Image (cartoon, rainbow, N blue to C red; front, side):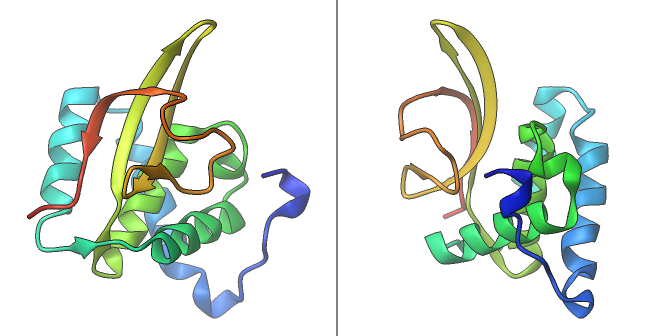
Length: 134
């Protein structure tokens, strides 16, 4: 999604996305193992997110944060997952790599399909994933 294509969000709808973006900014700086433990704790008690819920969360995060609208996929994916959690749901949060050429990426997905990503499922091999709880 280009920066020009970002949706605008009414002022009254911005507090939760901004809270998620702020928390994700802090969490994006912790070590991967600790981030995974924090996200596993956060997902507890949440229902699995639908594609529509996850897409709406991602869109709202991008709408309130230029950093998340750009190339900061880790913060964007964590913020979208946290925003879903604030609303009682949880997508699968993933981070992974591809090897030729090497690239790392973080994203959210539902039912094995990346949400709001330009790449198809399987383009990146997941290394860490935090799926909805049972």
